[in-house]
Length: 390
Image 1 (spheres, rainbow, N blue to C red):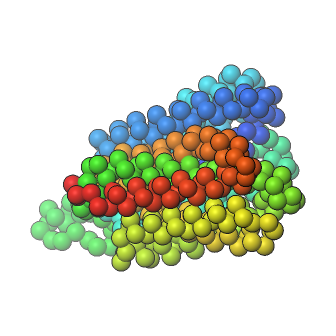
Image 2: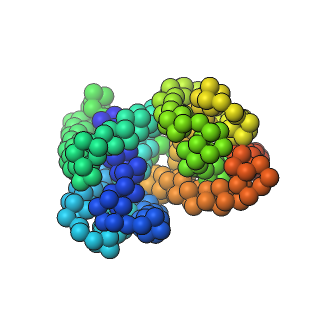
Image 3: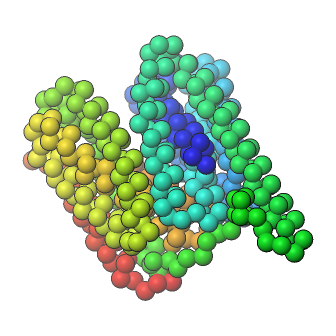
């Protein structure tokens, strides 16, 4: 399981940061064309995040669909390597890339269906963050040394390892099922040395049905503000703070590195604290982070603020995913909906940047707006927590 999480994280960490560069250098895409292709790619991913997990829910077969996603990743790398025009690359991204990206979501759906605790899910998410610490620098290093197409070979290699790892997990699961069936037929107890047979945990939802809708709305806002800060960081550092661009990279790198211990810590706390309370602490950290960014003038405070950023992200990504799985009993659907709050949030981040920068504060207004929206999300979560349970 840890190996699979690391590999799925590497797949996304290799492709996502390099995709715009691949479209520009290999197929001659303009900035506007890159935006259009990425929009179509995200729409495909949005639809796949609902359809494939829904199919896996009905079949109770998450590992099999994960294998399909890994195979699609391998086909995508080959198609992009062979494509010579932007339309061909676009078709490959829409038809193959969107569904291929769902594999990591299905991994967490499989975890939930197997009866994993919240702490286990959060710890697995921390492994994905480890991949994001190393993935983008490694991808750019590969491109710098061997050219743009070389990163496609790296993605293909990761896909092959993903196929092998998932096949091993399927074999392990099948062996455990056969051993349990044989022990039961013999009148004994199933062996505890083998992994448990997949069985969805039954937990009481912390909110009612209306609360689920409210939580989803709050998470769209939280994902939007998180995406806004990450997207505008480079421009903000160079144009408003008048610092070298290296400080933007340092801030994002420190934040990614701090996410891992923050996720591990919040995973330990999840066993004895309410998920909504932990998410509320993440919201408070986010509000302080965005206000701090609006006031920052030098690099030292910029780097120091990443502690708050890491805790905010741990609340959104670490507790948010198991919370959705607890609210919605279908593991695939719940994980897909959580993933899509990130996609919708990325879309909403555009207007936040545009409107926030038009205020008298300039680019600092973007972070003031982000703080305000995070406060709204915190209020929505508070309302949801007071709704009657389902």
